[in-house]
Image (cartoon, rainbow, N blue to C red):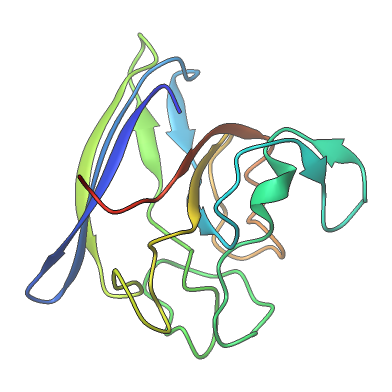
Length: 145
């Protein structure tokens, strides 16, 4: 990833801070993916090898198979469905938000997974990834230190 994404437990959820560059201006889908790997791999839908395909699909600990909004309960949709971020005209993203969908560890734990920024906005409805386009940037979520 050309930047950083940090995760910190706070009262009411997990605070996510994003600082990235090198994106096209506009809104970008952002999701936590299942595998802690940022390498080419097969797309779950087409089988075609894509950038960061080895990250797997969206983190879905309840196996819902449903992409939805960042506030939809995890028992009804992916836990990895996060709010979109917006890149400036220069392609930079600076954003901080709190999500109740993830924790650091446990069933909904984000550690040892990956975070992916997609090429386009997220419609928060279409399976499997909200029509958010190709995987543009990827980072493995590891403990600080």
